[in-house]
Amino acid sequence: MIVDYHMHLRGPADGREGPIDHTVGAVERFAEAAAARGVDEIGFTEHMYYFRQLGDLVEHPYQAARVGHDLDAYCDAVVDGKRRGLPVKLGLELEWLPGREAELAEVLAAYPWDYLLGSVHVVAGEAVDLAPGVWDRLSVEEVWSRYFAAVGELAASGLADVLAHLDLVKIFGRRPAPDTVAALHEETAAAVSRAGVAVEVSTAGLRKPVGELYPASDLLVRCREGGAGATLASDAHAAHDVGRDFPAGLDLLRAAGYETITVFDGRRARQEPLG
Ligand SMILES: [Zn+2]
Ligand SMILES: [Zn+2]
Image (cartoon, rainbow, N blue to C red; front, side, top):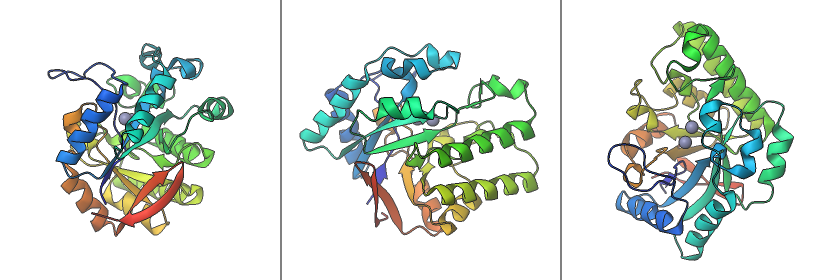
């Protein structure tokens, strides 16, 4: 089985990112694109910060500028797609918001999620994945250690079923010394295994300055050794990116020793043969 468990519903556009399109028509277009790439099941994971129901929790200015969409309409579009027989799952991409876990869990409890993705995009109040973001305020070592500390806290929170782009912090190719990286990977894999969450293999990093899959193979191997399940993901922001570069993602999973993929229904995980 092949899944793509991370994508954002957008309308068509030339070159730039298309407009938000939380409609069953968009769900159908993404499902068609998945079928054409040989992907068996897809999951939609819109950023939580687009939704007015979660607007009180949004802190970063880039994210606050995007609040205003309706979480009910988004969930209804995906549920409608399921009713039409499409192999689609309902998810959301959560931010790590220390101290606000209970508020977030309360809003989320009203919706029929198949799984929740957990992401760290912001460290010390600044973005890790935007330039200059946090990078002109803190040293590379500091960004990396704070980033992975946040990932560990997110894992332990129990809010997320899957951790997205586990080493997003490498996005611009800036990294500390190899022994520091190895120590952070070891701590992170231990946190993942303690929390019992799955990790995502994402091909999105291939389209970013770093030009690599997320996560690094040594980190993925440590997660597998610690018993973590894995998903596969494109982080598509356009239908034509669904399932993109999946042969590379499958190679990374197999090289790390994975023979199964984690599939979710109603926040319950099970394993299916990979491929
Ligand atoms: Zn993300
Ligand atoms: Zn995403």
